[in-house]
Image (tube, rainbow, N blue to C red; front, side, top):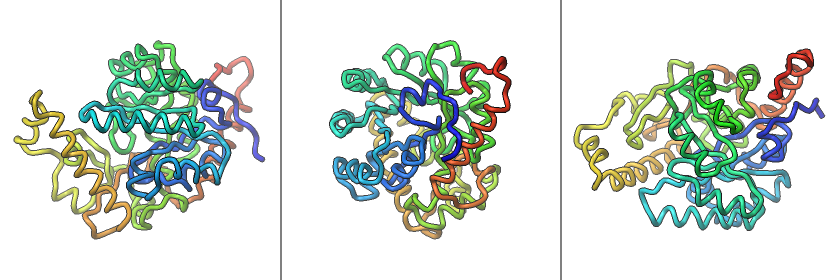
Length: 342
């Protein structure tokens, strides 16, 4: 067993050894990947839409499948966006089911997380919320969350606009543990983010390039082959900018929605319907691309962390390297200079 890294507020909240999350990813979060990260000492996070609609598991049976592979803590992703009441009620029911199955760490995104916070706190759990800017962080704090996932401009999927250092500076005085999301493709970048003061680091793209992630091999190879400049933003998928690997399809689609779609997204009577339609189209396209590979309208989400990803590694090896690098960095810092993060 490699050296144990120092504890942080996040590791204490999540009950894990390494301040590392495998971010919830649609369509990439399959049970084997979630379990492998948790078993290695990090926190694997369940993405319920991916579990049910991509990998074919009933939610309860999928959670129990993960439990067959590891008895260590796992997390659960709850997107609480209110554009569809039916969807929101289903997500709340899934949160209740996850609590029944013993999950005690939740990552919420979009919307106001207060309802989830009430449920999870009632069961003795913790909730962290995805944010990209201070105004959303203040809303989440006021809703009672326990920590923030700080999505910076190097993240895959729905990225933020600030770099990791600027986002930390903007949120550090809120009194909540902060987890960096975006830009960590290797253990060096992982340690740098902890050094900034973050209590943990969320990796997504790095864990797609693992054998446990059940995507088409073309997707993994595209991540390994990509350089930072190959990551581009497009809002053609969901109406808001998404970080993807540049492909011929992305070039044909162009970066932006047309004027009619933009008008519908701005209008108070049509914006929720338009978001729902874009989301439906997006999840279908991402699922097909991830599972079928090159040539099938390929749209692959990835972040600028591809700059540090040069090979396909087992998930446990990714966690092990981060654990060792953090422990080594901690041992190199004189006790008088340690600031409590490491």
